Image (cartoon, rainbow, N blue to C red; front, side, top):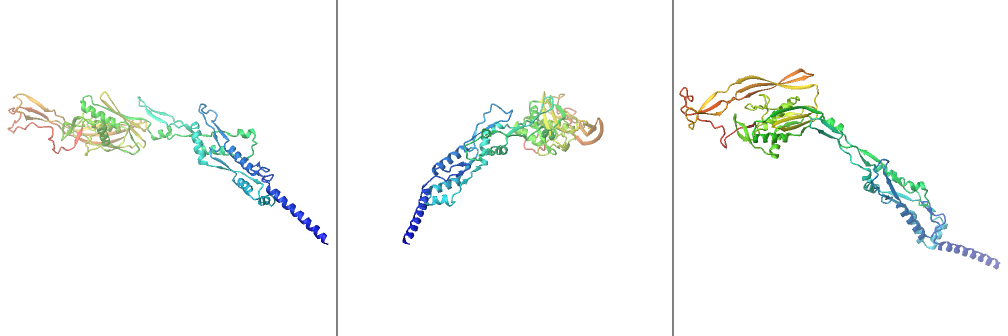
Length: 489
């Protein structure tokens, strides 16, 4: 009986010893279980440090795969397109779960390592995760390949040649790198396995044709034409051949300031702004102006020839005249009734761009002739012309004044007389050469200037009826005197 118990105990000890021995054996083995894989790469049967090193190297290899970008067929062949790695393009491969499991196995006690082997405490297969930093991709791809794929668009241009023809230069489409499409292309190249076995077709997939999209310029011919500067729709010319140096300068200065003025639809043009611009940029010189109904020396004489020339051009387009007044004295570069004066702080010249499209004003000064040209939109079968009617003419009187510096029988013309007028002006609209509308523009009055002749105080013409001789008038107002508005003629 005792022998039986001893035999049974001995067998139990042998079996227990075998189990402990097996546990110790498998726990002391630091190689990963066979069949252990990470992202399709078998690392089972390797030591934990060797497996970790292999994984790190494979991840680095994958992240360092080169992506070769090529331009589409017909692209610029002399532009060098650098290669970039997947890591540079924002890709990272994550095997952190598998590596943590391997590190845990490596650092476990022999008993826990055995349990991990036999009790299912360790997964046998791990995947890999591929992550992308899209912002990094866009920055790197644009910096590396953007210039090769991109070309700035070129705006359309509108020019007016010497023959006053409106010429359009077509816009040119630009190109740019389609970053979202390129991102999808490169993302499709991301590795699916850590296995180093790759077919030649897979390797070929790392060559990517850059997707390019066309970019439109901001300014196109269609947009320019929509603005409405189709052709020259009117021009008017006046001459200042008899003007002195100062007045010629002022006419030219005001014309330069007016040149290239662009009016949007319904904009109201104000000549006062042009006067201020010309004074600031070019300055004015002394030339005759009208003061208290007399021509006197002043600064700025001549600028009203520009406003008057512009007025006549505007009438030939049928523009809405907002503010306009004639000179108090008649000017000789235009028919009476068709001038437009300016007096700073008193009288302005204004009109509205009523064409419904943009209106461009251009000026040309050549051989002492001023031409104002208007470019815009106007029906070609419509034209406007002006007509004036003299309602009344007031002839000048001859007035004799005394001058004791003159000997008896001599005389001196102090002021040459000019007739005064009352004039009505009309705007006539024609369609296909037929008059369809006649509109009264204004009724203007111009002062009469008497003939002033200086004679000796004893001359009998001074006081034919015994009247007291009048002194010789001084046409120039005294400094500080209330001079009133100055009209530059």
